[in-house]
Length: 236
Ligand code: FPP
View (spheres, rainbow, N blue to C red):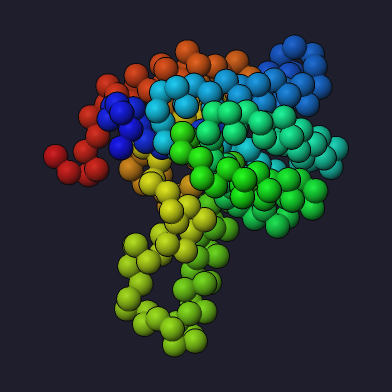
C-alpha cells in the first residue's frame, strides 16, 4: 500500500493531443510529440513524489502503425532517445520500467534498449513505469484466449477451470493491480483500445488540456477529482 491510501495505486494515461498542440502553433506534429515527452518526464517524477505505485502510459497503440511512415519513424526515434536519456534518471529515482504490448514489432535497436533497461531496473521499488508500446487491448485479450485454448487443447487445463483470475494471469499486466484512475487528455471521451479488461472499475478523468500542456498541477487536479468520487465497485 502507498503511504497515502487516498493516492491511487495505479494511474493509467491516454496521452492525447500532441498533433493538435503542434497544429495550433503552426509546427510539425513531431514537435507536439517532443514536448509530449517532456510531459512524460514531469508526470513520472510527480508520481514518484506522490507515492503512486504504477503509472501506465499509452505511448504507441497497435493502430498507430497505420500513421504515415515518417511519423512512425519519428515516434520510434523519440522513444529511443527517451530511453537513452531516461536510463540514468530511472536509476536515480529508483523507477522500475516495464512494457506491455507487442514489443517484438518495435525496431530491433529500440527493443534491445528497452529490454536492457527493464532488466537493469527490475529491483527498483519507487514507481513502476509501464510503457504501452504497440499495445492494443483487443489484441491482448485475443492472445490470452489463444494461450488458454492452446493449454486446453494440450490437456494442461480443463476449460471449466478458466475464471477471471486465470484469464487475467495471461494478460501482459498479469503481475500488476488494475488501474484505479484513467486519465485522458484533449477532452476526448474514448477508451481507444487501451487496457480494456483492466479498466473495468477505474475512475475516468477527462482533461480538456492537450498532452504537451499536461504537467504536475494537472495531475494533482485529476487525483483530487478521483478522491472526490465515491468508489463502490458496483456495490452500495
Ligand atoms: C497522441 O497524440 C500521442 C501519441 C500517439 C504518442 C504519444 C507519445 C508521446 C507523448 C511522446 C513519446 C513518448 C514517450 C514515452 C517518450 P496524437 O498524435 O494522437 O494527437 P492528435 O490526436 O492531436 O493528432
